Length: 208
Figure 1 (cartoon, rainbow, N blue to C red):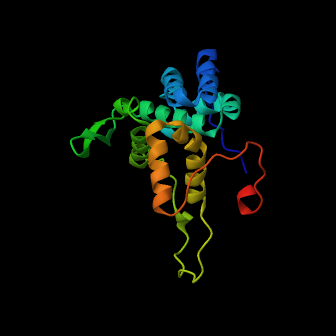
Figure 2 (figure 1 turned 30 degrees about the vertical axis):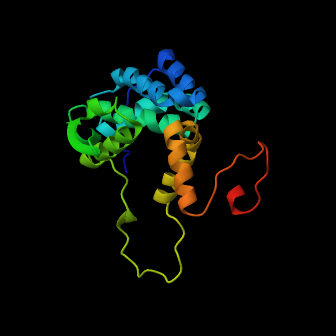
Figure 3 (figure 1 turned 90 degrees about the vertical axis):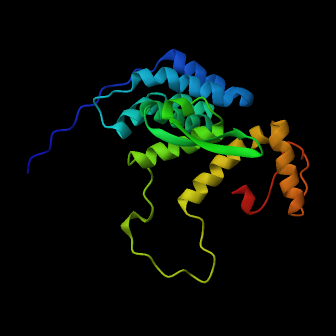
């Protein structure tokens, strides 16, 4: 048996300018999104068109693994989403823009969605991944089973979604518009939001 030849991949250089923007994004919640996508825009020049799309994005992200570890998961998520849009710049995506009485949906190029709201950026990146076969596969080919009578534990998709929401919660709470919406939603469900002393230990499932 002979070993198959291993495909050689180019080593992505860690640029100090990109690393600095990642670090800044991790320190300032108010400018997190802007710094993360600015870093992604600079790093997009390092995308190697000779490698498959998924790998070329992963190679660039891997070059800044240590920086993301210091900056936090949310910075990495926004950076990857922005980089994905820039890697597929000409892909058409649906976004929502302000309109009289609410919002309206329109189509733009993926490269344009990079500079839009965080919601549009993340949703556009999801569309790009689906369009290019990079979306996470659900089920892994397993045959569907009958639904259990008891509530099933959350799968990894829901756990990731909750973790992402939890990461950005402090940023939302500091925003004058989102803070009001969160308070209103909690009141509608019979809850109130109040500050607790920092360092307070929470016991129970929430502490896990």
